Image (cartoon, rainbow, N blue to C red; front, side, top):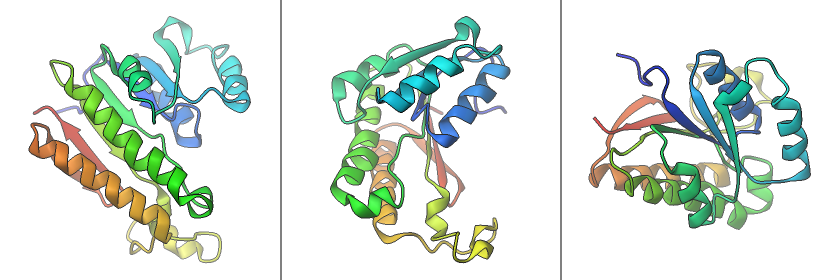
Length: 191
């Protein structure tokens, strides 16, 4: 059974991050209606202007600018979606340099998304993705970036990612089912 049904309305947080852009492109190519959510920075706005000129984008993409730390911004983004792919995160080295900011985004943002989702019936499917950073520094030891490599994370990112996962599990107890996809990703669904 497919995780996401055809023609679903999907919210992608962190839409203009490295992974977010590729996920949005892939979803649009497959015919989904996509809503992007990201912070309105000069860089993100420039990426958006370039992105909307691409052939597959058309009228199936809508952008909402906001801050994942702001519950009202998140509520507006979540409204009327069938699924949420949560990619917004602060990763190393920024998470190491500003752990409080990373926790606000990574943990607080995840909690805001789940709280907003609970306001809707049916509850949107929720896909939470971590980062390859759970495998630790890759530049000094590229062998760590193999799929069977043990997880040796950057400490502060690991802590905020673990707290985000804990928030997901709390919401599981409140009605969402959770299945593990791999060490870095969990999938919350309404089934």
